[in-house]
Image 1 (spheres, rainbow, N blue to C red):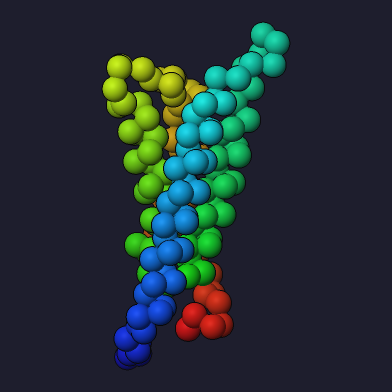
Image 2 (image 1 turned 90 degrees about the horizontal axis):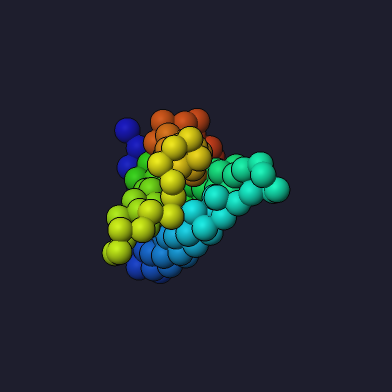
Length: 132
C-alpha cells in the first residue's frame, strides 16, 4: 500500500489556479467552436471546429492529468466543456447556436465525450516528476 503525503498549501493553491485556467480554456474553446460550427465554404458546410475542439479538449485533459493523477482532476476540463455546451444551448431567449443534427452531435462527441472518456478510462500517463 502506498500512502501519499498530504498536500502543502502552496501545492493546493497551484492546483486551484491550474483548474481555474483550464476551466477558462474549456469555456473559451466551447464558445468559439459553437460560434464557428455553422461555417460554410461556398455552399459546402465546413465544421472544422469539431476537430479543433476535440484536439484542444484532449490537450486540456492531458495538462490536467499532469497536475494530478486523480481522474476527477483530469476530467474537470472535459466536464466544464460539456456543461458550457449545454448552457449555450439552454440559454435565455430560446436561441440554439449549436444545431441539433450531425454537426452538433459531432461537436459534443469530439469536444466533450471523447476527452471525458480519455480522462476517466483512457491510458494513464506518467505525471511530472516534480508532482509525485
